[in-house]
Image (cartoon, rainbow, N blue to C red; front, side):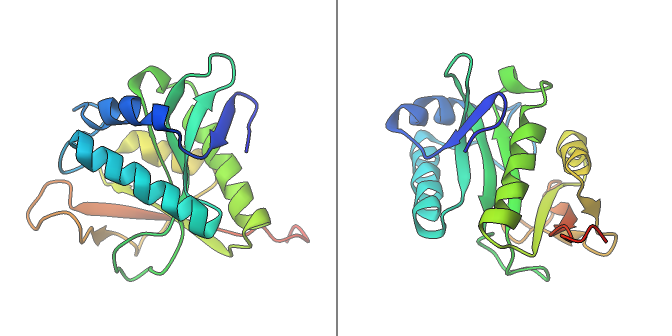
Length: 180
């Protein structure tokens, strides 16, 4: 898939090193309970690509059209945990710091929503973030998602008592083709 400035694609072996560097960056990972080792990062690539192969969608590797640089991932995923809103499909992103503040997450997330609704027939897509992750929450709002006021939850993959355990939930439904 493609947007005006980005290519959204399957993962390549050459993506592993910059992805591992990103996952070991404390600033990138500040809303996650831990940094990832190289082995954990490589395992994540394998899981993500397996989802793309199995479902047709996943967290696509993102590269800039103008430079060919890998800048992270954006896409659709099926959460691997149980919560009141699962099963579901979420839209998510993680970008390198050099890509922050340039609208890339918003641009690719919009394209992901479009694919989810038009190409994969999804009725609803969710997104979630740590309560204090205002940058990701702003992206969710820019792409038309709405905060679910009853959706706040303790993320089951984050340890009890951890300051990043509480998450907010955003939702968006398939647009009505009649415009109503």
